[in-house]
Image 1: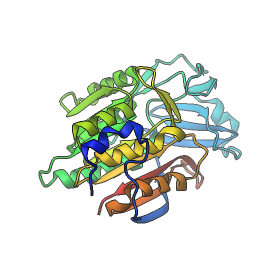
Image 2 (image 1 turned 90 degrees about the vertical axis):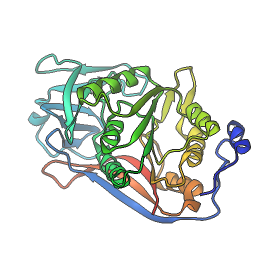
Image 3 (image 1 turned 90 degrees about the horizontal axis):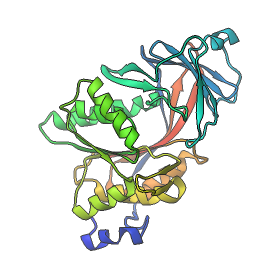
Image 4 (image 1 turned 180 degrees about the vertical axis):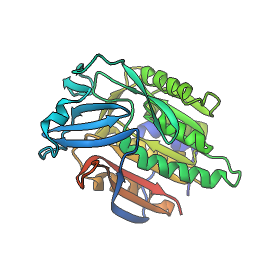
Length: 325
């Protein structure tokens, strides 16, 4: 992989999205569908009429789901027996409301994934502190890191838009040195709480509250590199100092920056995109533009949730990942 000179990197903010433009294409595998069948801590019970019914631990929860265009398969009495129902504004900046028809519930409750404990959380914007479909990425990342560290080779992972930190905890447990970046001080606080709940206070994780683009631009000027990068950007967001993130405006530059941050022996870069009106081919071709000359392959497609006791599948997001050979 050919790295840019420091002089080129210094002009990153003036050449947004144009530092790395590949003249080649690497192998492709798309469409790829990554499925999550759930486990004892999570299940998609049913979906339809713009809603989904899920189980998080012992709680049955109803939330909006725009992809659920079909009719529910289960009788209404199953839905009516939910422990929590989200109502109100569903925008990221909106002030939503939770209705607890059976009894008042605490804001948080314990959950786990593959033995890692963390908090579920009722937020005002309908999210619950975890995206279960990401389990397909967590398993992949864990395997990649373990393969490298098994031979006593260090692995540095950069987790951008890291949210409440479950991916960072998975990577750290597998042996990685993790840098976790999120623009929300509240999310960083939740991530630290999850670290304590998981009993991983000594895990090698740096929790950084910063704007992802500004952080990556500084890392390039410092000459730092990573063996794996995760990007899970929102459609819209704000940085800690008022920076504005718009996915369609800023994603090409963000991917460009990650291309400059991967090490000579990097293993993967994984991008996930939610709530956008685009095909996975859009992000696939953007990844090809930046990583096409790196060798390896690019897998692109959708993350889906399998419905419990049903053949129905619910698409939740788009993804594209570059994987070295």
